[in-house]
Length: 361
Figure 1: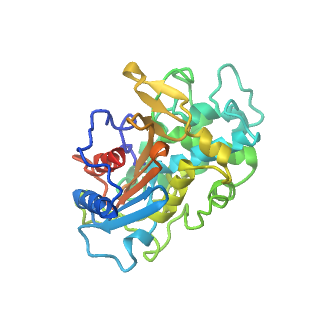
Figure 2: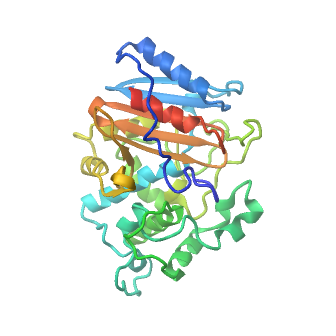
């Protein structure tokens, strides 16, 4: 999630033409390590982590252009940016699975109970699927963020402004008719869920998702150099301050280690017997198809592409100095978390490398 430049402008990258190299389907652990090491090397970032789980067996490889930090790279928390939306989507699926809410709830009524829903209101389902008709960011975001554009633009746009911008906005498109990737929309969703449950966002996500899944190491606020990775600008040398998300917590606040992310993804691979099992299954189901031939498939929390062995689910994210890629393939019991401390602007090797790595397993 970046100001003015979403991780994938207009949505996820069109990677349908990406084809992995021909490799043997080996179970050999050495082959897996070599493949992960090659992926680390291909991403020219100060710190790189690729963590893979295959049928419950984990392999984590790290590296980077910078000297190793005092704390091993795999133990640091990384900013997930827009990949945080997978946690928000799972939370919404859980709240609907338990009957506390429904996807058809009008967001404006939850945020302002005195308001009438009106005809064709923006619902919680519209917000999580990017079909609300909202732009990527509020209209006045850029003016307010400009003084901190290269440091922490989101910090200048607090929660009350996000809600106010939503409630005051004039509709340009009927909800549910167009897909447009929107950090604004998912941020509004977070505030609507907070209002509906009378629970602050961090407490809500922790109590309903992170705690039950055993993700005690994940946080929503910056830590210290002993706990958090340091992001860098495009040059790979200039550090950037930790991300402060302002009122956009639901859209991009999560910080996590590679191992916590594997635990999160492994829960999606096999939810049997786990807390949130119904929600974990629900976020696999397609809810939206778009594009030529309906080739772009979306679930409540993930982008979905086909493979010969079954569907592949993935989501990426970027902040001013870091990037993340999360993905999993239930049919072959494989999950991947990729992390790096450099925000690319052009010729980005990170996303294609991570995508191809998961696709070829």
